[in-house]
Length: 227
Image 1 (cartoon, rainbow, N blue to C red):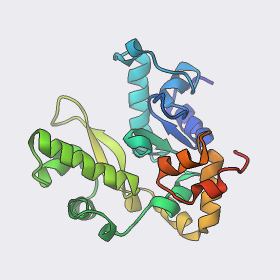
Image 2: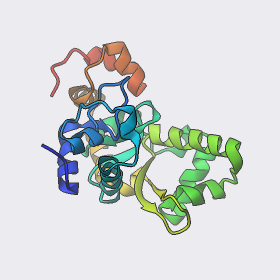
Image 3: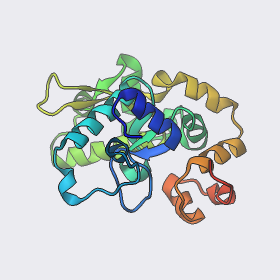
């Protein structure tokens, strides 16, 4: 099925469990861009990275999925744009997530506390609040955000195009934006969470899966039949 609408996109993510927004040849995940083209596993030729109709549609849909809370959207797998279904999200949070800012860097804690105080913020304002300017500041900000994405403390929940030429992502706290997933995660055993994740994981060797998700015990469950 070719993805055309937000409902189509949400159904695609629900089926995939975990998907990239755009292809990465190193990890065989389905992609939203491919689904827009009619084949979720379709590779992307170099000339298709231009601002074409499918790229623009994919860009709008991934933002809408996060804004409408139809999926989690952020930088997770290999630090790239990743979509996670609401069905898989509790299991992944049970295994890698944290609601405790004490487990992250001091600058990461600063971001978390700011989001708790004022609610979702654009990356522009978050970076300004950390006083991270220039190329070095930008690189440091990227590392902080990736740390928070990978621990599922934050999510992209919209865009703000009022102050920049290119829309700025709006970031919200996971605990505020996905409370149902947080509650469901608390009820899952570690074993059940591993089983759910493996059922939707890409077809990689066990050690590769462990590295992909940063979960040393994942290989013990990686020989299970996939859903």
